Amino acid sequence: MAKSDLTKTDNPFTNAMQQLTLAADVLRRTVTRNELPDLERNIALLRQPKRILNVTVPVSMDDGTVRIFDGYRVQYNDARGPYKGGIRYHHQVSLDEVKALSFWMAMKCAVADLPLGGGKGGIIVDPKLLTAGELERMSRGYARAIADCIGPDKDVPAPDVNTNGVIMGWMVNEYINYQKSKIPPLPKLRGTGKNKLTDREELRLRSTFTGKLIRDGGSEGREEATGLGGLFVLQTMLARLGLKGEMTAVVQGFGNVGYNMAKFLSGAGFKVIAVSDSRGAILVPGGINPELTLECKKKNGYLAGCYCSGSVCDLTKGKQITNEELLELPVDILVPAALENVLTKQNAPRVKAKVVLEMANGPTTPDADEILYKRGIPVVPDILSNSGGVTVSAFEWEQNLKGQHWTKAEVNRKLKLRMVSATGAVWDASRRHKIPMRTAAFVTALTRIFAAMK
Image (tube, rainbow, N blue to C red; front, top):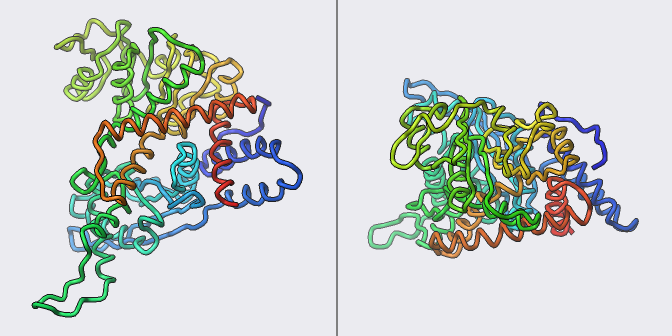
């Protein structure tokens, strides 16, 4: 990999555009002189989102006052299908962050070969400071504010940071009510003049939001889809690399994704010897039991010093280490599943894993990427390895549109096919162009998006 002067900045959109630049440089080498103008035009179009919605959401607070919340919905690219992406509630939400996330969603959907584009939304708010009623009124208000610009064939939002299936339920209910209000009243027959939707029409409108609870039209397998998809990607990568046999793994982060990743790795025969949370890590050479470790974490409130084996918690079989030490353990698989920028130019030279599987978003800085690539350590990029979540969200959208509900076994079978195919495409691009897996993932995504833009 040629030395690059591209460095990590504090601006996520700047970082996203740097990734676009790296992939575009590769693509320029693959086209003829006559094809170059079209390529440059498409690259230029992808340097800005197609549409930015900046909305204000007035909310009646419990104390009788009205508070105005600022929100965004960025619709980046829809060449391959409706915009797709989550809605986050956080006090540090910014337009540049939402723009970057919507760009990455476009890339992620294209890597997974989904018939969807990229979008993202957010509200500047600390949801922990709101009551349940205030949170619901704000969520419904945001849904109304963007209602004219979303829909099954336009834009399909989902949960993200600090949002969940319950909030999606409020939003889809508000969206359906909004759509009903636009239907001209029927002539009064037998004493009724209500605006009506058929059950099929209402289910179709429910496909506007994914990540819903099962009772609201959600999909089986959605909660664990990111972790399971990551396992399928890893297994495919290891087969391509020719690595087999009993392998050790460590997982940094023990939230929903990290826990499910540890659970699926253990179930697939990997020995997970260390996991961590924000307060520290535990190293257990004999391998942890993910389910019992989670129980112990819930009981104690943190992982450090806690290890569960068999049916009881035993504090003597594991030892406490730091998150930093976990990243440098001599293992086969390193799974960053928590924060961004944890692998840097400072610690990348000390990483001893054979493969890095990114389950968090952006855990590896560009400098670390370059160091690991030169050391021959493959980094499976986030837009590939954690794309299982959006893939099953796409399945939910498809099920709602078709009036179907698939079993978990069927969802997981379809998920595996997608993940195996996506990993193969990125691997082939990496070998063909002699580039790191991350750049290869962007090249794969851009190739598919540009083909749709013709």
